Length: 124
Image (cartoon, rainbow, N blue to C red; front, top):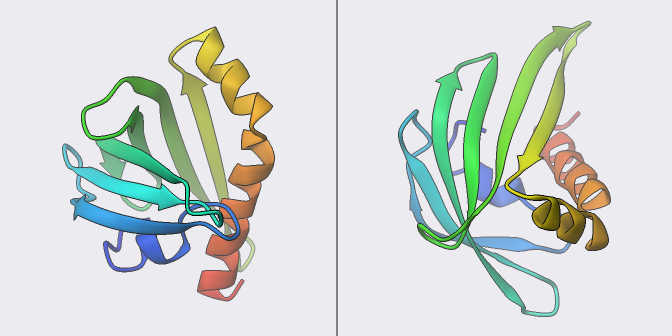
């Protein structure tokens, strides 16, 4: 979540890849990238980081493309648990329509796949 080389390697659901245009993972920074689906469909993204309380929490806003319309506010928290870390990703959508659209495309399962890719990346 804090390494600009590593984040694009595991980010996104199974079968998706990332093409980074610009990445600055600090508070006040942003990540401009395209998520590329297995069928080649390109989804422009822009994450704007508003809080970077390492190692506890990262808050960011999701936009549809660079400086595009706001999609959601997101946060990820990291809590020590046993010999590992519990990672919780939460989202508050910009509108009911955004939320319903995300649910319709399977966002919960896709988010779990993304966290699964992270687990595999770190060897968990």
